Amino acid sequence: MPKMKTKKSASKRFKVRGSGSIKRGQAFKRHILTKKTTKTKRKLRGSAAVHKSDAPSIHAMMPYA
Image (cartoon, rainbow, N blue to C red; front, top):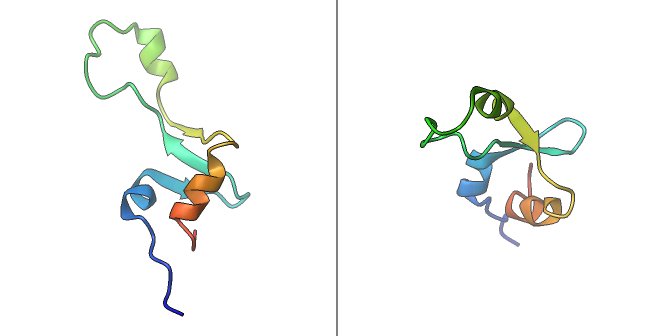
């Protein structure tokens, strides 16, 4: 049986942590930043965890992660 392929778009967007949870980048910080407050932009820094209901579909896209 051939190897399963990883969805490359998913591998670029998500990383699996050592605990098994999946981390993702935070949305809404690319453009139109002038109307967002400094507080909002500060809270959008860094990464966030993927919700547990979305995790099975991401694990299916990245079978070897």
